[in-house]
Image 1 (spheres, rainbow, N blue to C red):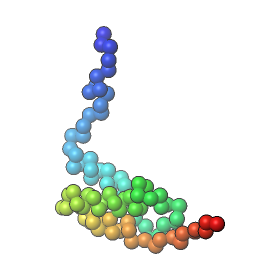
Image 2 (image 1 turned 135 degrees about the horizontal axis):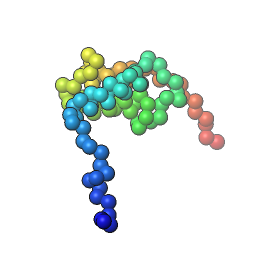
Image 3 (image 1 turned 90 degrees about the vertical axis):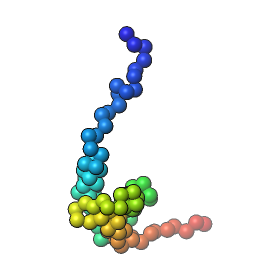
Image 4 (image 1 turned 180 degrees about the horizontal axis):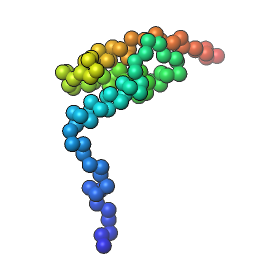
Amino acid sequence: MARYIDPRELAPPLPADPETELLSSVNKILRGYPPQKQYSRHEFHGLYSGPTSIALLFLKLSQAKPGFSVAGKTAKEWCYDYLEHKVPEAHVTPYR
């Protein structure tokens, strides 16, 4: 009996086709969180969550794969769609 766990046995299998996996993941994002013309201020969570992060994903995707398109738009067009929204007013409490 082995005294250790081989990490290769625990690793999930690699996808058969990375392009298919990428397309599937992007479609899932577009269906679950489509671009909107207006967001509430509660939907902005910085660079790692919300419409800004999805725009960044599509920007990076357009740089890494210039010919990539999904649902009839290029990655750069999707980036612009996520950035074209009304920005909610920020409620700032002055520091005293």
